[in-house]
Amino acid sequence: MNLFRMSTIILAGSLMFGCASPAKVENMKIDESVNMSFDKSLTSSIEVNKVGGGEETNPMWTSEIGNNEFEAALKSSLKSLDLLSKSNQPTYELSASLMEVEQPTFGLDMEVTSSIRYILVEKISNKIILDEIIKAPYTATFGDAFSGVERLRMANEGSAKTNITKFLDELSKLKIDKSNIELVTKL
Image 1 (cartoon, rainbow, N blue to C red):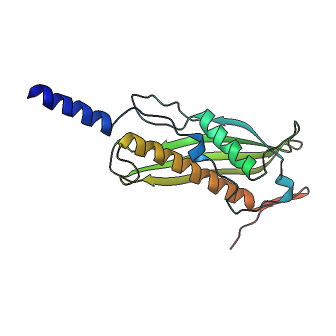
Image 2 (tube, helix red, strand yellow):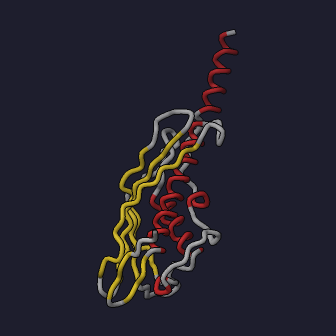
Image 3 (cartoon, rainbow, N blue to C red):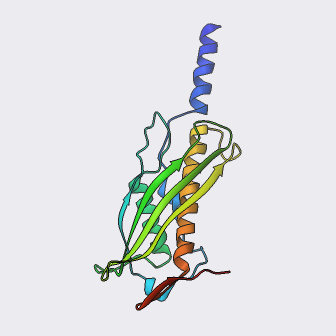
């Protein structure tokens, strides 16, 4: 009886907790179905220069958003909206820094909030076009996945995707004139 009980506990624990996996690029990126328009000067002109602040996932601990995965998702999102530079001489450099990723330790619903700082700089003048910290929450529910580890990964991915979407929304508000660059607020 003791062997059966111990086996059941181990099986249940592995099903509930499992091994942590990093946030997946394909679940963080934005595709061309997003309906946004951008100033024509941004078309094919942005280079992702630096992404930092992310953490590598320890399979025995919790899912995280890694720099490489976030950078790939950001580049893929820009490419799908025809914003990523195709040349060796982009007009703008974009850097992104994951300032904070607030995660729960456990729970039925896992809410993750990512705070990411985006800085867009015009390369020739070295002028900062956009410097914004964007905070984006996302909740993965028990209905999304039985495993808590899986729900946390899904919440990380959802928060990163929402964050990229909010950044692109801010980028869509830019009206760029070489003599006067401004952020236009839509009412």
